[in-house]
Length: 169
Image (cartoon, rainbow, N blue to C red):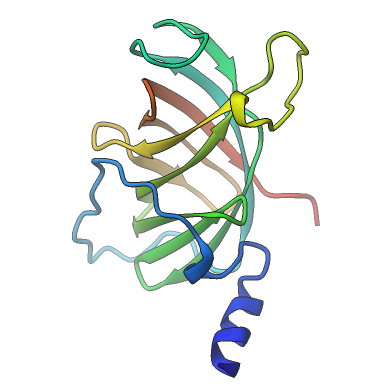
C-alpha cells in the first residue's frame, strides 16, 4: 500500500495510473531500439492547437469545421522507450519514444472553445472523448517542444494539429 501511495505521489500532478481511463483508438506502438532524444520523465506540458472535423457525427459540427482546442495538462512518466501520459488527471495515453518521434495510443477528453462565448468553458458539451487513430499518432519531440497532427475519433473523425508547451518555472 505504501509503495502505491508513493508512486501516486510521484505522478501526483497527473493522478494515479489505476485511477485513469483508457480510451482506445486504432493506433499502435512500434517496436523501438533507438534511444530517446529527450527525457520526458516527470515533465508537464499543456496542449494547444486546432481541431478540424473530418466526418459527420459531431454535435453542432460539420466536416471541415475548425475549432480551437482548450488546453489540458499532460504529465509524463518515462521508462526507457516507454512513456505513460496522464491527461487532465483523468485519462491515460501510452507512448513509445524512438529518437525524436513519440508514438501514442489511447485517448482523452478533447474540449474546444465555445463558439458562442469565445472562450473555453470546459463543459461536457464542448468536448468529446477521442481515441488516437493509426493514421496520425506521432509527435516530434525536442527538449522544449512537441508538435504534430493527431488523427482522432470520437463521435466523428477529426485532425488535431497540436503543439505543446511547458508551463513557466
